Image (cartoon, rainbow, N blue to C red; front, side, top):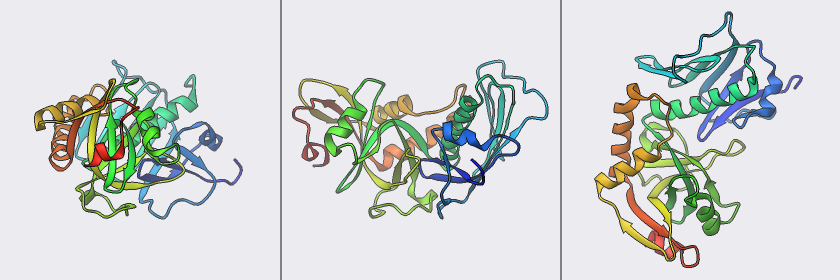
Length: 272
């Protein structure tokens, strides 16, 4: 990449990147690293990769995760990380069979960890912008999250098609595209641009012949959020902080069960 710089983006998080002995051309192969161009002014984070001085013993399970006063520590296959609120440092084994894949996995975990450390969540959800704020559509693979988002907003109006980064407005310095009336903001995971908006409603979707929207109780909504949160496994050490964030989210945002029939679904049915 010559003198080109690289930087990291995941949802609302932008970080200056230090390579520490790794080939910076790897940025071209990552979903989360951007090569060249200017680092966004909103960046207040640092991300560094370094070649490990000695082989890294992988965790007994696929990953080992721990939470302490400094942040989150993770040991993966051929990499280890310490992630704090404003920085993350990785050591990567240079003989990993697919170094680009290892770095991509480490970047994904960094973004999710930064959301957790700031009191937020990353949901398996698509998101679109409406006049009243963002609408989130959460569900399992194949439920139609991306299809519904594109149907409502078109290919250019989708904020997120798979992972939605949700943060309490009080815990971020982001300037959203609409007013800060809502208690939570959502940002899509698009590495070349950042658009954030207050969350208006959260829908848990399933396919049906016709569209029907049903309000959820707080208990039902909490269960739905915890089923759709993106998080590390094992996550025992993070359970209390995730539960607290989920409770705050459903307290601030209206949640619904949405049976979707694409032939009759409309903006009016979702925001009235």
